[in-house]
Image 1 (cartoon, rainbow, N blue to C red):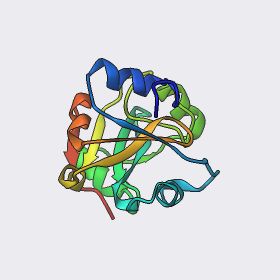
Image 2: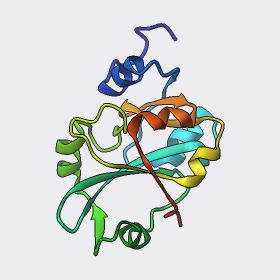
Image 3: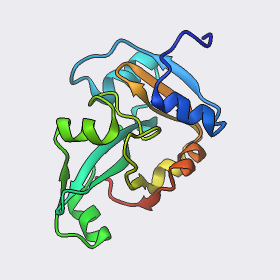
Image 4: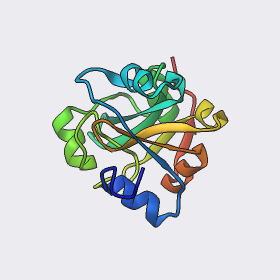
Length: 159
């Protein structure tokens, strides 16, 4: 792809500013298609497609968890790990205000508001990941080390 063949999002600007090598991947977005759809479109293992999930704690403070596409987050285990009573998904409007992205196009890179980021431990073991590039129907492939620019904490909360 040429430099103008993909959207220049806040995520792309972040990756460029941090000199992160990435490969853009466009695919036809499907409402409620999730990572299974994007993985099928790109011909990759869904385990390598990483979801960016915006959550909030019992004080309504936002946080982001990066999780394998074929796994779910145990919010109970995450809350216990963080010493909190309760963690739940942020509603789409709140997630959009915090991140600057639409649900289905949320990237952990270039967030509008700095939020703590948590990465499922087994993501670090992959050779390459596919993660949202900041727009619906747009993923970027990067090495997991690119996530270190987010100053994340590693967690084990997959189920």
